[in-house]
Length: 214
Ligand SMILES: CCCNc1ncnc2c1ncn2[C@@H]1O[C@H](/C=C/CNC(=O)c2cc(-c3ccc(F)cc3)cc(O)c2O)[C@@H](O)[C@H]1O
Ligand SMILES: [Mg+2]
Image 1 (cartoon, rainbow, N blue to C red):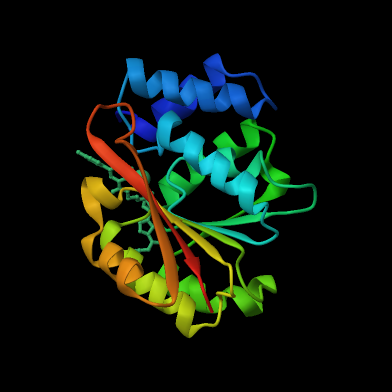
Image 2 (cartoon, rainbow, N blue to C red):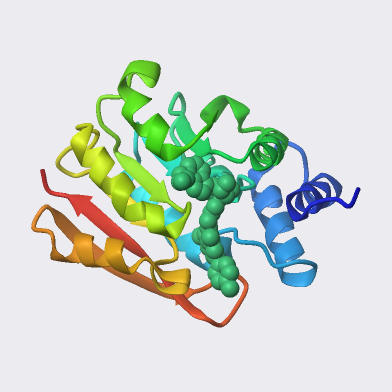
């Protein structure tokens, strides 16, 4: 049967990137998406903003919602200090399988805990399963209509502390209007919009950074 786009992306990484070199894996995926097939990775423009926020926060506890093929997982994990791991949630087993191989190709498997399942089920399990008290940094990049219910779940589960940083992709395109209204109106968050473009296109998009105020 015909291969899937994630499988073709993995092949491109194995062909064009250098094993153990995260930067080359990132470049190989960006090249594939620019010259072969568009795919919904955060991309290099928004990816640079993600890099700068991760570097600024220098988090000890990290969560990513929506691994997809692991592009942003690799971007984040390569910047974490030694001993720090990121937890990434992916409910599509085929995507998780590709992501696992891309993360391993980058040599970052020891810095990543990839959990197969739905955020709605897994967020309430974070404390007991992974010994998490609160998250320092959360990257939201899963189904756009799930950003709002999941941020409320973080609050209910006591997974945010004063200063926790949430960074959300695609707040313009495809758009997350309810989430954006919530974090911008709520007195419990200090929000900032980082304008950019939809990955590999000239379409307007951006990232919303929201700091929990406690
Ligand atoms: C009910 C399940 C909610 N919880 C969840 N828990 C764990 N993993 C979840 C997930 N939701 C989705 N996922 C996974 O995340 C990934 C989904 C990401 C959704 N992203 C987008 O739709 C998206 C879409 C675009 C896009 C933009 C313009 C366009 F014309 C077409 C697409 C751009 C992006 O940057 C995007 O991130 C998949 O791998 C999916 O299996
Ligand atoms: Mg996205």
